[in-house]
Image 1 (tube, rainbow, N blue to C red):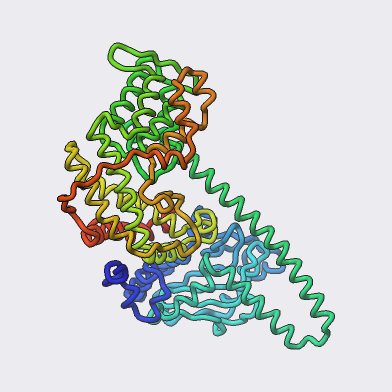
Image 2 (tube, helix red, strand yellow; image 1 turned 135 degrees about the horizontal axis):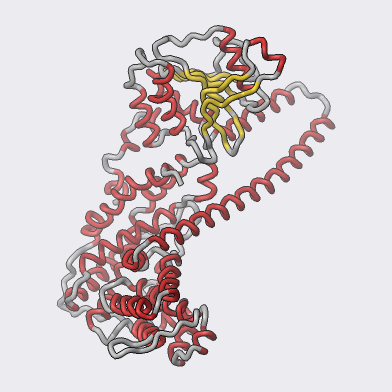
Length: 556
């Protein structure tokens, strides 16, 4: 079912063989390249109209760890003053973490075929081997063709190791990418080194010398692995700190309403909105504190997702722990009383309000069905999109971001859940229950499908897969918010039954989860699995397919 629904009409099945190793963005770039008329382009027009886009497709961008230095100036030492200048400049010097592996010189497109005087080629060779650069490859480009030379072996213009012509760019671009892209060039360089080692071994006769070499290689690899692991750990920590700071900055700039919306995303586990709302209550005057406290309570009485009511407990406990006092008024309860009300209502799924009670169960069912719908019917699509996204990332961003199928699946589950929720979320308890029972009917169908595991061995940290139909996000989130600060909360005068709820185990929470209302025998489901596959799931996948690659290409 998945292959028919998800891949019908997609390029992967229909593309020519030479295109199937290319990403969507690479294919679009190459098709555009094949249509450009360079016959009237001067050197500057080749740079601005083609080369800068080529560098971006290869993974280089100004101001990133895969930087592009344009017009890089070099000081020539005295032995080279014979060329008539003391300083020269390189058109483009792409780098990876401040190391240069190749340089690019632009040529005018109105000279075709490309030509180069011997002295000009030797000058480009000088740029590549300059002590400040030490690049292994020289690349020349006039739009009609891209020519690559080995700086250690080339002596003249007629000795390229690769030529990619405009008319055959789709067929040969993968070779150029392997040699020059930020994602693959280091591996290509190491492969060339191994080839060189192999050639030296072809003529070696001393077995002891060979064994000494093997020992030396083992030492290099052992020490190298430790360095690479340290680099990767530092990069991930830096990435995490960056995003943590960014989330806090965004939360600080958000309005109260936007913060409440962010607290209402079922698959968003960021603490930044919760921390920001709590900070605003703590730092507000008495009137401002009262307004925010009332806004939280009124929102809980509305139609939020379960996660909002759990996050509300997180906000209120932080404010209590900060020592803030908000006394009861004639129209609303105080801080401690509001916290106790929310905890007690969360614990029994707001049973005193029939519509809110039904919505709590609908939210759980929508999340479970969204989870099973996505993980059992869209796993292969998400894995393919993840693979394409990883291929577009620079080495550093791939290590730091570490895109996995699970990371792509989580927002998709949240999107599907929202679509299901909105279909039946209303002020009519019977209508909400009809949606709940319809989702339970679809869940029966989904449970007959095989459970698929993430192909990269990752997990999504969502617990519905392990807990069947007892998944209880509302009470889990409430318990966790209380459990962090139980002694402080007890000292602030919270009722003992609220404190005890914070002490419950997850097993006890699952065992005592309020049961959902049972469908009457005459109930007829409003939908089936096919309806949800062709509706919400298709919408989710269409959005995810368009967003995944643009997310990967976005510059942090």
